[in-house]
Length: 357
Ligand SMILES: NC(=O)c1ccc[n+]([C@@H]2O[C@H](COP(=O)([O-])OP(=O)(O)OC[C@H]3O[C@@H](n4cnc5c(N)ncnc54)[C@H](O)[C@@H]3O)[C@@H](O)[C@H]2O)c1
Ligand SMILES: [Zn+2]
Image 1 (cartoon, rainbow, N blue to C red):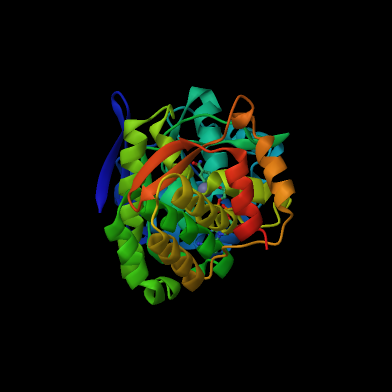
Image 2 (image 1 turned 45 degrees about the vertical axis):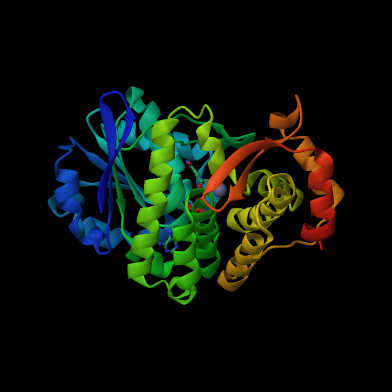
């Protein structure tokens, strides 16, 4: 599948999703006519997929500069940002040069921030290599690095091309893979029941990472996120539906001192918020059971042993809620979302009775 996302007037991102795409990078990148190329990647991907990427870039690959950063969240630091910038300066990179991010959301976030700030902006290509980055982090233009708090410094800046090859997911650890699957389930709930049915009917194929089902599922996720981002490019409102599972999920992550993967916390948050939706929006019990069963079968958690009061306290500290009741994006049914103010007491009851066990 090839699609275009209109991000700003006169600019758009080309998104290409296909198994085997990593073998045909030259034709996509050549069109950008870059004056120089730097590939930013992490220590793990430098060993797994970088050699193939360089080969596939042909003559462009031979001339590319490779900058390797630490893997995971540790790459999103000010000192890493400075290191990358200094390497670009000393190698004579200009506004006409191209940065290619080869990695998960961490590498994409760092590279996007570098690309948007270096000489007021250079060309950017994402080759996302985690499921989370393929369905979420590489689409929407948000980037950033951590400073004092997570993502404290960042911009909105869109890549010219996003190259998604589901085959790279074959080397991902189980935990990282499930991390992305939670966002896939979220996308199905917020968008349409047919997509949710597809996931239910393909649990085994998904767990086996069959490339055909992955290609289909990733395409669906991208189309849905793309449509939402296009309607709300500056994050004024509609994008809030993408937060399903994230309000409670973030509080869980914080209470667990970030010793839980984001997707796992979102899974717990999603079932908790769906349960709240049964109370405040009439979301059907049947669908709540279907969601719980799908998460279970995929190996995603729906409960956690934390003190519910601490989780709630951490939610109250969220600056979004300083001026009133929490507003949650909740499903009315599968595929239909509403933004609803929910009293803390309702959230508290749900946490005590179902989530924190
Ligand atoms: N910009 C956005 O809109 C957005 C959205 C969601 C998340 N994020 C950010 O994304 C980051 C998390 O990204 P992530 O979950 O993709 O993880 P990650 O980039 O931190 O990578 C996790 C681990 O997986 C490894 N890895 C990546 N691809 C691999 C592959 N194909 N095979 C084997 N190992 C591989 C990495 O080396 C790393 O060790 C967070 O910093 C988060 O803030 C950004
Ligand atoms: Zn998320």
